[in-house]
Each structure stands twice: as C-alpha cells, then as structure tokens.
Amino acid sequence: MIKTMHKLTTLEVSGLNAAYGESKVLFDINLKLHANEIISCVGRNGSGKTTLLKSISGFLHPSSGEVKTPDHQLIGLRPYQIAQYGVKYVPQDKKVFSDLTVRENLELGSYASGDYNWDPVFDYFPKLKILIDRKAGFLSGGERQMLMIGRAILGAPEVLLIDEPTEGLAPSIVTHLRHVFTDLSQRASLVIVEQNLPLVCAISNRVYAIREGHVVAELKTPDEINPSNCEQYL
Image (cartoon, rainbow, N blue to C red; front, side):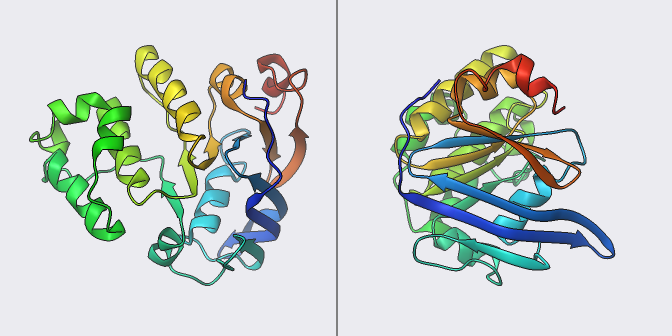
C-alpha cells in the first residue's frame, strides 16, 4: 500500500447532496483528495458511489454543496468543462465508440484534450498499440477498459474518477490495472469506486465507506485498510 501522504488538496467535496427527482441519494458528503493520492469508495450496490462520481464530474447536478479544485468551483459546470479543468471521469459501463477503431477512439480523445501524444497510453497499455486498427466493438471487456482509461489520461488530468474498473475482468487484467493505478498516482490523483477489496487495500491511501448515501467511515491507516475490515461496509 502507498503510505506517503500529500497535503496539497486537488479536489474537495463539501456538504454534497444529490437526488434523482424526489429520491435523495447523497447526504452531506464531505471528501478530500490530495495530490498523488489514491482514495477508494466502498459500499453496497445502490449506496450512492456512482452518484458521487457523476456529481463530481458534472453528469448529475447536485441539489446542494460544493465541489472544487484549488482554482475552480465545479458545481454548475458541464462535464466537458470539468474535464478541461483536469477532472476526468471513467464510467462503469465500459462504453466506447464501437463502430470506430481504437485509433479513432484515441483521436477523439486527443481532439477533446488537445493532447496528441499517445506514448503514455501505449506505455500503460501496450496491447492497444497492437489493436490500434481494430474496431472497438470487437474488443474484450478488459481491452475496452484499457481504451477508456487511455482516452482519459490524454491531456494529463490532475484527477481521475474511475467507476468499478475491474468489474467482470480476468485476474491477469486486474493485476495489470493495479500496477497502472499505482503508476498513474505519480502524475494524478485517483478516486476509485471498487468492490475488489484486495485491490482497494493494496493501492489506497484512504478508503471512504458509503452506506445509504452517507459517509459512515474514513479508513486512514494500514491497520484499518484491510479486506476484512472493509468487508463490513459491503
């Protein structure tokens, strides 16, 4: 587990409340993310973890609260504006542009970010270079996840929000992503929603446990961040 903590806050969530129509999902969420830190959010399905990431990234407009970087207040901005300010979201659905090739998917990411240097993408995911001319619709689930993360790191974001990255993936790909996330934390800060507790405990500086839309625990120490302790929140 990464033990070095950094004091510079790259993202702060304060008093965040969110709802879908009349159904309230998040209740006064407070969260801080520091530079080059990995934090994970754990909890049962339906506890509000994905809603939290969508609220931060602008895909859901919170009913109240603040989400800010050191330079910008993000509430009220559109997702593409938040991405331009260095906060990128990788959703759970693993959706890519199926009729386009891997190359064309990356070109769209480059167009949006202005970053046409794909070397870091291929450093993390060499297989994408091999599959560069394959249509994304023919990729496996793990390959689609690689492509989504690869697109997201274009533009050198400061914050990556990654939702259930290992869901349904083979153990070998999960192991590879573990190393990727650890390496990515040297250049960005990560918020990961994940049910794979061994992975969570191996890479996280801190863990937020969410239950029924509330943060019920913040685990900070190596003694606290272990699978058996985290399991009580699932």
